Length: 303
Image (tube, rainbow, N blue to C red; front, side):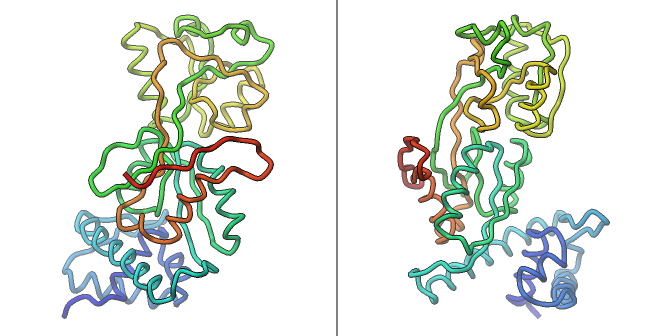
């Protein structure tokens, strides 16, 4: 017998939610129902699709191949449901968003949430490498990613372009400078994001090119932690400019050797890009926050 529609849907949601219980909650069925559907699918395929551990589930090589198909079926199923139900209202829904650029993503999420308060949003911040992998593996609906790679089957809407800066205390000598060189930071303690970040890749290339070594570095799991470390006098942070309001008490000093501007864009798998929730999220990127006084250009159509 061929695997049926329900088995593929159950399997896809186990992977997306990371657990059988999470899939059951999303689909509104019992966990045993999800377990039975996945077990039947694995029997019909003739090999395990999932590896079950205490930390959750992961895909086997065969499982990854089947997941790509199953998740496309989920997207198609959602598109059909939207056509049947109509586009007049958006009272319910669920959107999984990932990002490596915190402020652009949170700005859009804020606008989207005000427009659609009953839509459930799951948001996770990851390093650049992880965010790319999650989107490539179809574990999220949409991503807000800096320098997204050109991937066949992805759609992209550019949001903004920013460059790398040094975040320093207002009273420091560096804060009085129009710009700063990497060699000027060589004796400082440099605060960087976690391994796998775009910052790590960009900075490593620049350091090799210009022969600069830092005396000390500290790794932080998030940009807010990096800013807090600077405020506590732990060192100088290097990150993209305009990355969060948490940095409003710090001074951004452009780094001469890191003069390239990096584009942050909304990206999504092509089949999900046409779903109304994703389209509404894109539309929210062009709406200024009430009272913020910011100027935001409406994003271009999908490229």
